[in-house]
Amino acid sequence: MARAALLTLLLSVVSPFAAAQEPTGRGSPGVACAEAERPGLIANALGQIPPDDPKMESYSHGNYVLYVIDAVWTAGLLAIIVFSGFAARLRRWAGMAGPSPNLRVAIYAVLFTLVTSAGTFPLTVYAGFLREKRYGFASQTFMAWLGDRGKGLLVAIVLQALFMVLLYAAIRRLGRRWWMAGSCLAVLFAVLVIAVAPVFIAPLFNTFAPLKDSRLRAEILEMAHREGIPADEVYEVDASRQSTHNNAYVAGLLGTERIVLYDTTLKTFTPREIKFVMGHEMGHYVLHHIWKTIVFLAPLIVGGFYLVDRIALRVIAGRPSLGMTALADPSSLPLISLVLSVYLFIVGPGIATFSRMQEHQADLFGLEATHDPVAAASSFLKFGRLDLDEYHVHPWIEALLYSHPSLSRRIGTAREYARRHGADGSPSEVPPSGGTSD
Image 1: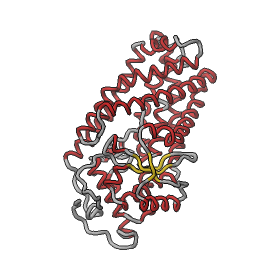
Image 2: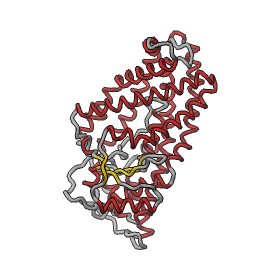
Image 3: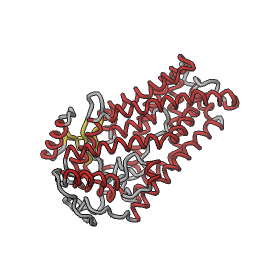
Image 4: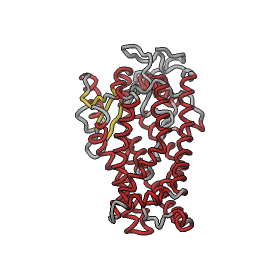
């Protein structure tokens, strides 16, 4: 979860719209549908993978379409702001705040965030509330959902304003070398926010409390300590007040690490499944995936800022009618965002491929930590049923869009582990293929 947040944050700090989107929502799963009151493992979880039902296909395929629509909508909105001259008008409004260049940049960043949030609001309402409600995910009323969106917007305004003040200060002072310093700022700023988010940002939206199940808490902490994770508590979060999604994660950096379980997960997953999911998340920490992701993304961000320097300067010099006087002019922010949004859409498949590799490594780590391929396969099957995440994904869709391996591949990993080590972690044969049942 922390690694996924890092992907999102590293990209969003350089462009308000750019986010590492996961088309099937596996990172923040789905529908708590008709499970028994006491959850159990999926029968014959290592057997034949069931076909996708129509509702799973409808939801997953809709996510793919929304991914493309969001990219086109974002680029179109930014292009309108840039080429209509509205970017320069926002600068005039920001200039009313006074002569301080830092203050003008901060005000411009606030105005730009508000304008772009308003421009994407219809799509956000449909994708984030109406569609989720229709598929049985959202548990909030519209006003409660809107309140959370409002808090998220305030957090984004503060973070964007702080980062843009630093970025434009680098542009003013370093001239054509700004893109190197700007890249370093983006990475450092993202790491800082990842570190403080579990302590200062997440509690704005939910209540975190120590896990009530003392036995499960002790087992998770024992596994964490065995793997070298410095944690002394496991937290339960009231995610059910927003949705019926299931999730568990290890978040934080630089001493703020926190192990968190959704309350919905505690209701729909068995302790064995929960321990595997936590083993997977701990794998990201132990295998240093956050830091490896930083190393991987850093040259991509450097390349993106370099392209901004080349393309934005040409546009500003060639289109004086747009009202942008220089790259250091705050009105260049929409143009910077447009270039980076298109760039990140292009390099997105490469980022997704890197992410899938790490997710596979974390699956293997979870299997080694628990020696329970049955629980692993059962949890993947439940993510499909509860998240409406289709098991069988077209290879091209997986290659271009998926930040995780498809569920069929992940179940295959569990089956391979069982084939080598046995269903209980000791050498034996995989159970014969067959259907699954609750």
